[in-house]
Each structure stands twice: as structure tokens, then as C-alpha cells.
Image (tube, rainbow, N blue to C red; front, side, top):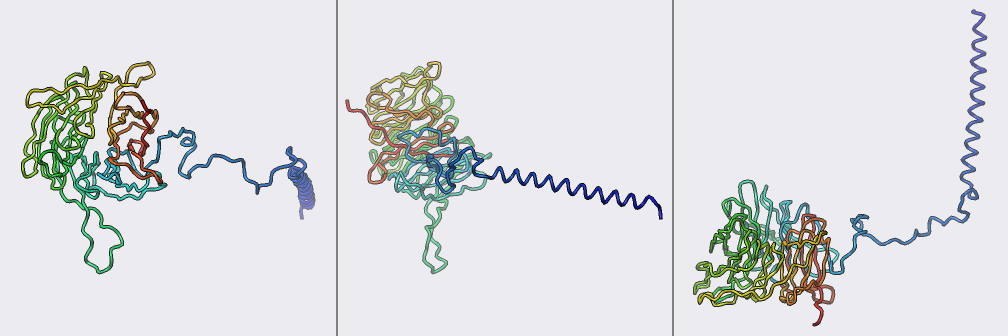
Amino acid sequence: MDPALPIVLLSLVLGAIIALLFFNSYFRKRQSEVRSIAKPNSDPNPNPKPLSKPLPKKPLSKPHSSDKDQNKRHHPLDLNTLKGHGDAVTGICFSHNGRNLATACADGVVRVFKLDDASSKSFKFLRINLPAGGHPTAVAFTDDASSIVVSSYTLSGCSLYMYGEGKPDSSENKPQTKLPLPEIKWEHHKVHDKKSILTMFGASATYGSADGSTIIASCSEETDIILWHGKTGKSVGHVDTNQLKNNMAAISPNGRFIAAAAFTADVKVWEIVYAKDGSAKEVLNVMQLKGHKSAVTWLCFTPNSEQIITASKDGSMRIWNINVRYHLDEDPKTLKVFPIPLRDSSGATLHYDRLSISPDGKILAATHGSTLQWLCVDTGKVLDTAEKAHDSDISSISWAPKAIPMGNDQVLVLATASADKKVKLWASPSIPSS
């Protein structure tokens, strides 16, 4: 045997023993340090609060709200938010009784919310999926709260669909536990020569010999406006504004007039003539509103259908009397002119993008970008302002035609929609007594 082998083995054993002694001393020292850290009297706070005690109170927040949302100031007129949209909300419309609100969303879905109480924590809604590839741009109720006309845009052009109450399933004898889903009652494709529909407004035709049917005016991004019979889908009139490109068009609440805002300073007004059987017979160009110095961006009819309110890039709003004997060459008259009370950071006057008047005709809601203002129609004075009403530009605005329940009260409600995927409900501000 090699005489050096025992020496090597002995060296290895002694080395292992020395290593064990070293690590044993090291771990004992670390354990002692851990114990000293864990001692209560070593805590700089000699009387720590038990974990069972609650932390200092913080403002309660909803699970879906972020810290950023919590830091935002809650506007006193902000009643509620309708959530659940998967993309930008492009259009909204209330039913005639104000209890249903239809929303058009870029996710390809139309939702009909039931507004039993404006202060509710959640709202039931009916979901209508449009045919594949369609992006809804506008909605309008027809004769009842279960019939809706939707404009949908695809690469091949714009389509109109009227959804009505579906037939119950009679294949089984089981009782129906759910309401039948809406189904398409009529449809038109490639309307407006494949151009997109900018706005769509409906009104119950009650003027003259009209039979009360809903007439819907669809306004394209070019120069044409088409009138549709809401229930049958029949085209009952067509006009060409001949004013560069359309901005929007509206129909008066009684179904008598159509007015269009284009990229010009003048507003053209047409009258729908009804036959003795109540049907729409023809559409006549009857007057022009002349007075603005720059393009009219938006307009709306007053509830009595006798006046039009216009907003222009010239920094002013005008209220016009259109209840004139135009057939005797009597011109519409400007009743009031108000400066637009909205300025940018440099002090320059801004224009309004959209207008909507309350059903009592007393309050005008107006928007610019994400800013929302309420104005007194009588004086033009600002009643209230929400400078950041939405996180993106406001895309649509509409008053409920009737008061909506909120708790034990009935309130006038304004709805606004935006690209931020939200629809908000707002209370009506009070008007100071003169």
C-alpha cells in the first residue's frame, strides 16, 4: 500500500470536521440574529397595533374603479354610467316614453338599456348582434320601444336594419321564460351610394293629415338625406342639400320639417307634405336661415317644432322662428343671438359640436370635445359646465323625452356617449329665478 495514502485520508477527515465546526458556528450566529430581530422589544414602535384592528379609513371604492378614477372629481349632475360596451359608443337614442335607451357601439352590438330608475346600481339591457362585419353608427326608435332602426357601416357601404320583436318559439309546449329576441323586419343595403350615415333622427308625424307614423331622416356624409317610413322601411322622400358636405340633419318633433347643417353658413329647411291618407307625399325646399358668417356645426328643433337653434363656427348661436307663411314669401326671423360662452386657453371662442334641447324647451345642452355645458334657452347664460364629462370626445347627446324615475322623484335626464366606451346619465340643472 502506498505509505502516503493514510496521510491523505486523515487530511480529508480533519478538513471535513473543521468545515462542520465552522458552519455550525455560523448558523448558530445567524439564528441568534433572527431571534433578536423577532423580539418585540426591539421594534421601534413599542406598542404596535394588533393586525385584527382595521386600518385607517379610506374612501370606499368600487372593485372596477381605479385610483385614477377615484381622484376624479364627481360632478354633481353626474347621475350614472352605463357600462359594458366593448368599444367606442357611436350613437344613442331614447324611446318615446324615455324608459329605454338604445346605444350603438363599434363592437358591432346594439344594446337597449331599461331605465327603471336613473340611480340604479345596474341596468338590464337587451343585446342585439348586428350581421358580421357591421359597425353601427346610429340608432333610432320607430313606433314603439321594441322597434329600432340601426345604421351599420361596412367596407361595401352602409346598411339599414329594422329590428322588431321576434315571434315566440311555438315548437314546444313549454311556457316561454324569456322574451323572444328581436329579429330583422326590413333591411336596405348600400344606401346613400355606399357613403356612411352621419346622423339619424326619428319623429312621429303628427302635423296636418299625417297618420302618426314614425318618419326617420338619415343624413349621409355627402349631400343627400333620405326619409324612411319607420315601420315598413319604405323610402318616402329624398333631398340633396347641394351644400358641399353634410354635417348633420334633423327632423322636427311633429314630422313637418327637415333642416340640414352643412359646411356653409346657411341652413336649408324642407317641408314634408302629407297626403289625405296620412302618407308622406313630397318634400319641398321652403326656406333658408341666413345670418351666420361661418359654417353651422349643429342645429336642433325646439319641442313645439316652431323654432330652430343653430350653432356656428362664427362663435354665435341663433334662435330662429320658422313658423312663418313662407308661401307668402315671409322669411324666417332671428329671435335671439347669443355668443358661445366657451373659450380655449388663449381666450379664443370655441364652437359647439352638438346641441340637444330639453323636452320642456328651457335648457340647451351643448358639447365641445369632452366638455359639456347646460345653457338657459331664454338668456343664453351658462347654467353648469362639466369640463371633462368623458375621457374622450363626446360622440352623441340626447335628452330623454320624458322625466325618468330616480328614487321617489322624477327627473329630466340627459345622456351622453363617447369613444371612452361609456354612456353617462346627467341630471338637469336648476334655472335661477329671474
